[in-house]
Length: 369
Image 1: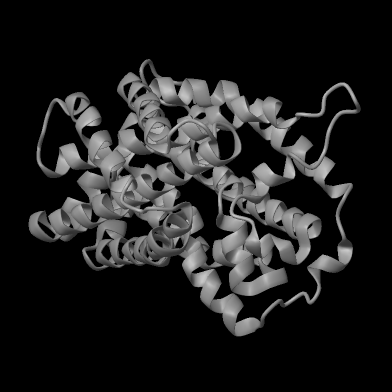
Image 2: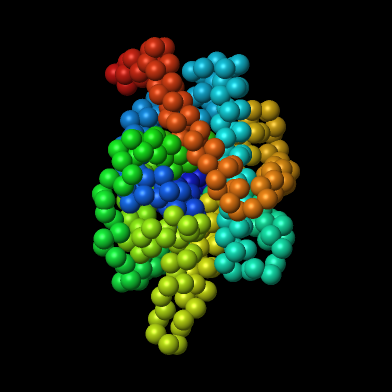
């Protein structure tokens, strides 16, 4: 379908969704999963995707009943004014903590690997400032930049993974089941958080050219990110073996392992700008969505003015953990345990309520008229 003026098309939306989920492979997620299930870590995105598949399908099925309606309108229509308020508030709180601790982790990566002499508080402030600038430009601009950059980002990541394979050890993937089926099951349930952003993105359906484009884009992003995350973790296990457990950010460690001959040894300087662009796009989009949710909950019309204020709160919240270890093991780990299962449960709840209220029958009768 032709993109309407001022609306996101399927290409732009899919690019945003791919980057929001796919960049998780470049942070501490691979190491966290390896610590949980060891050599079976690469299975977690696949199994988690299988667990999230039904809730996502039912969520999109429910949203298809209300063409052009976003998360806010549907939650309040199905759950009512008061229950809907608390549900949206819960979504906002979870999304806000995710933004704070994930953005802090991105700043920790920049500080640890690239700008060690610059104070973290300064780097984090600059990082948030760039995200504010992107969010204030609007989701349409973010989508346009995403579509331009996504191909360069995918190419650079694939190149990095291919180069990493050359120094790998195939024995590292054994035993196949890692620490056991029980650990795999537990990690797969919490691993649904990997795809939680696909639920949050329903807040921008009203910015889409059509609900049909949103549905198609979501499935494309879901499939691509499942393959991407699983392949990335597999390659990190292949490359680092048991040392992966002690690496906070394996992607940034991996790109220091190889070079293009004697003339270009600092290859990470080529990957840094591309990774930064992907990261800024991810958090600019998430900041925009968090602001939109907050503005709707409290009925604030001029949402653009909220962006700097919310970003400042997120910056202060993100500075609470004293060390990168605290961010990954304490704060972010708690968000990971809650977000995915909560959003999956909400997806099921919305579908059940829509079914009980006869929304599906109403939609069928409407089509038949």
